[in-house]
Length: 540
Image (cartoon, rainbow, N blue to C red; front, side):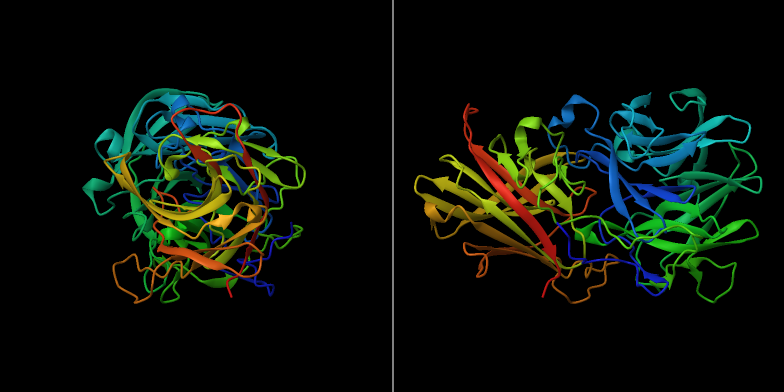
């Protein structure tokens, strides 16, 4: 299906706008290999995990693969919101691609590939145990390898500390003692994390965000020695720009010698979206963005529009990650992720549609592992999902969900000769790490005749994303408004409910589809729902 473009950063005149991706590709890291750029992002408990994006110009990106088909460890057969795969790093060394990723309760993992578009190796846990996060591997000129990482206070009891340890040259294990190389608690760099390591002009650099995801900044450390001591400087902050918390990302260059920095911005319900900033150097310190007074040595501020990177003669196609889907392929589109590790019995691609088998709901809607979801692709959009519910058995249901810590869904349950719509809202209440309790409320809607079940269209509309001021200043707008409506003829829609969205646990809101039934026991013969197509477009 050809998707209507609803957010593309390429302005078509040699310039681009930020964000380059208005979608929750959080904690991005990126590399250049020849003319190709590869970027990865966090994925938490959603699977497949670790999306791999590709670009030729740093502006136009497509999802081309996932590093892991499922999250390591047995417990991720259920959704464990906020756990799983945190901020990863991607590197290229001597013909091999390396992706190093943390799971804060389980350890630090490494996966490799010689073809990034192909199958990646089964992840190896190179540092078992809880606490370390945000790892980045680094290979020095003498062939030695190192790993720098941060820590999670929720797992280890303290934060704002970076560690360095020698790594096996093949990346599959660690060597020697871990060394604390920087403590943000001892200066003004609280919550420093997400380190990414590089070398230039004999200096070892560690790019590391500090101050927190909503209102923080980008710090850079440098030293002549891998293990320090490191001095530091803030090289990008919000300043007078509209980009709160500009940090956590990757330094990349072009074949023509330009330097650029990819980073995220937290915009609440839509998650952490991706920006691209020009980068320059002054006295061996980077300046990211544009210095306010135009000088070359001040702290930079983010740009909202700028000239595109000069990538030489690379062939460039204007593109964006896929959103709409007509399910005509032999595999699920790369825009889709499950709420937990998937099982093959949940779905089937029939050649021109998606068949979702009814799965027993053991808890509440937001805790179902078989939610099929994708990221919000723009600040405002509508999504129409066309469903055929005529194959549901009695008591089974299917519908569309908006998934976050506050979630909403429009579901249609078969009750003998009737189809009963309900609009349901749920709220996840968290303890220190995991969900303690979920509260759900349901609104019954007028029943439909079962003969109308063959064609149900659900319209999911998102408005005013990003209008919340995360610095605490009220802007006076309704926030992240989500509306559900449905139609039996595909043209006239009845409003079912609306809600103000709240992001998930460290992730932006996702929307998608499901099919389930409630019952004390699993059934042998279940019905199913058919998803004919999902079509995204701009709101009117």
